[in-house]
Length: 128
Image (cartoon, rainbow, N blue to C red):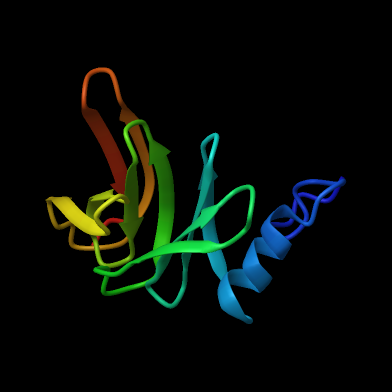
């Protein structure tokens, strides 16, 4: 099996090739999913939320000022995103709103982990 982002499932077109590479030719940097949704982040600063069964676009989350490097689906209809603008954002996908912006690093956030049970977030990136 090829591990490139557009072919993660051999028997399925994995959300129609990540919805044709995040709506025609944009570089998708991150994908995460839960039971019902898939979220993708791209170089064009966008975060898109898709229905896993129908592959329909549900939400576009706008708020980053640089390419999105990480996306994570969380419990309770929440999404965490991080970007090269130095921010980590938490979104409520039911209301299409950013509910928190955590800090502002001086450079890109390149890795992130979140413990949903404790609310502890760890993030790292490039030194400025």
